[in-house]
Length: 366
Image (cartoon, rainbow, N blue to C red; front, side):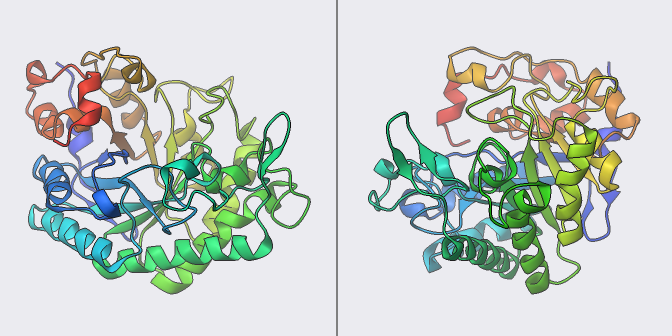
């Protein structure tokens, strides 16, 4: 039986104290009609706190009501009703002894206007979106960039006021912030594009201005990914030097924790080193890092959408990497989606009770 003790060691960073190393990964659920999280959503997160998750990260939460989302029933943090709903979520998690951070999300170029109440509003991205025969959306204007930054900052301030223990900016998976990072989607020749200084400026400004508003002690996290929705083999940073150029401006702006999204956490990032994305982030910046990717399951997440099941899998590799202190926290997605008591079962060596993950779990609010 694998000794999982390290997963349940308390950890204390400069401004965040957690009872263990397990994080609930942010997962879009689309169970908030009218973009307002209801009592069932509050119960969903509370159950994970009762299941001894160290830090819960919410599903992606929209920063405005127009350009930020094209996914139905995704919550926002803009309206009074949504804020009241999130207040109940936070209170429930805290009553259960848990901690919760909110993930702020702008879908950017992957917003589908047809699914919104504003189908005529163009979607935002660093360089716009072209098809073979026409320009669908133009590059964001200076005023639109400033508006987007302000909306992220306002949402983060609102989250702090509601009692969230941390804020995570979604800077991964081809969404708005990530569209500025990647040189294949940021073709700008102004101060928001070009080299790494330009391509990181948008995210750095969000972080810097948020830090000014929330103070030095409030935890700020950013989620990043090398892979893109349209290209699983993409590399935002092609080598350690580029990764350092990518991450350093974000740290200087005030980010506390770097959450590196991978499809499979055990895969190394660059040749000649066993480190994964989170391992490199920690090595290059000295900041705490969160890893993620098919934890405790035999298949990665895209298999579920194709109808494939994932069986419970060994945690030996994860334990080895964490014992080497390659990263500090591990985010668990589908396993916790399927079973709110996953962490408890691991801690109590009840692996025989772990469940197979099936596509049905994607559409159920547990």
